[in-house]
Length: 71
Image (cartoon, rainbow, N blue to C red; front, side, top):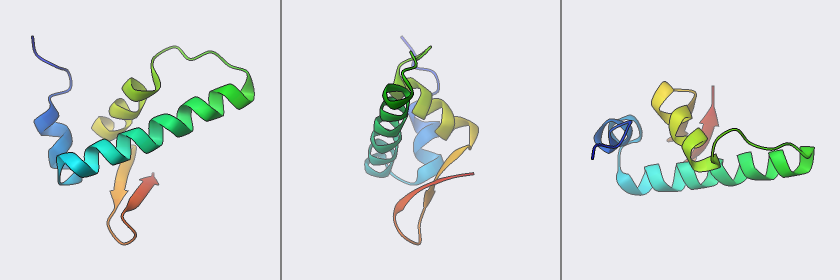
């Protein structure tokens, strides 16, 4: 079974697995909290949405502050 998108592609976008996990987890918590505060239901799981953002380049790692940056 192959994961989509491949983990190797995601890691290459942020630099390391550790950075990828932290970036995705932080963004997923934000997505979840925003949806809860707005009283909306999510079409996909927050982690899946965050992974898609990393894969498409919408969510990147800000290396100056080691924090996420949305483009």
